[in-house]
Image 1 (cartoon, rainbow, N blue to C red):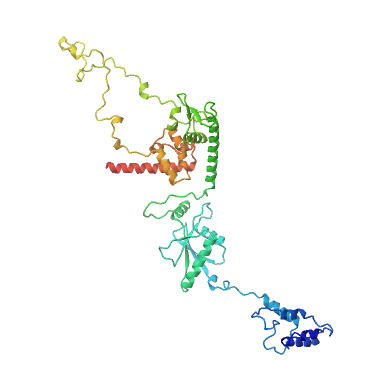
Image 2 (cartoon, helix red, strand yellow):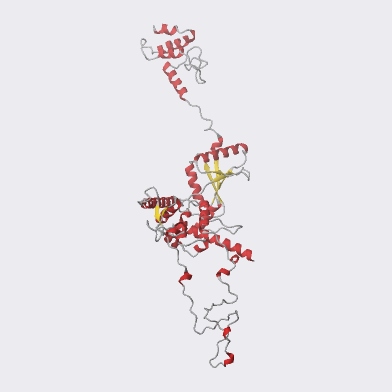
Length: 466
């Protein structure tokens, strides 16, 4: 019955049936145990797509085996079919000749003015490439790493540099290198790594290497040991302290029974209830947060914002007693004439001055100023340079360097009667840290900027006078 079933499949499968009959007689199996080929028949009868590795009938018969006399059994045929189907086509990218080439990097060094020649395979992980670049530059032990960029040797001089900081940037660099190789197969394509001159100057200064003299000023040095995390922590702590002081102050100002909790009430020196403005209670809170001397929840800081809450400074001239006239001081002439010299004890009567020349009452003499000297009010203000105010100076610094937040120290400077930047030159870093509550970085930065601004003002003034 089995052989009849195979014969009914048609003329096309007669070769397969004949082969089954022949191989069945040669096998070691008994005659009544012919291998089951129903699965093979069902696969041949089902529609299937032809592949280049299979024969027309799908059984793996070679084109020359037209009589069905192949020595392969149906089991061997199935094995050959499965092996051929498991072969995967090789990717064109893996056989690409460009990816077998190495990438040449020219990396600058802080130890000298030259660049080092590094060679990497295109399969090298980007993390290893980055570590080798940092090691070559000489910044592997510093927390602050440079911003890397690159340019191909085939790029024009006016072309912009491209950032190299992520894996995507590295992949883009490799694509550009391969594209350049395709255009210029005989030329060598290298990648020049670029680092900012300010970073390299700082790194050379850290290593004790001096830059050769050149034109222009050297850029300011960077803090390579500080990655910014400590500064952020310090700023967060300062902000938290200021917010705490602000909450305590607002709670204290809302205790007035007359004005109620809706106003920030403070009684001035005249006994009037004053509703503080936002700038007033904000500046008060800032000075509290920085623990300024003499500032409490009851006593605001000194300055223009709180002038009505502090007694005015006593006039120094009012406390000065009137100058006593010496007993032997000469009389002053009524008509503005020069005073007469003192009379000797044995002066003749005719030398005594007439009555109309002597004053009826003693006049307090005024001390005449020496010729050639001018009082401070008579000084020519044009001969003295005009320095910027601390308020304007710190505001401009805040706009240019917002991380330092120097404008918060404006109330302290006014409370301590500092108004122009030249008055800050006499202060040291320790005094700024102690009296103003500044950090070490802010105090160094402020004194440096003040000294530079003062020199600039004096230079302009000196040039104008000359």
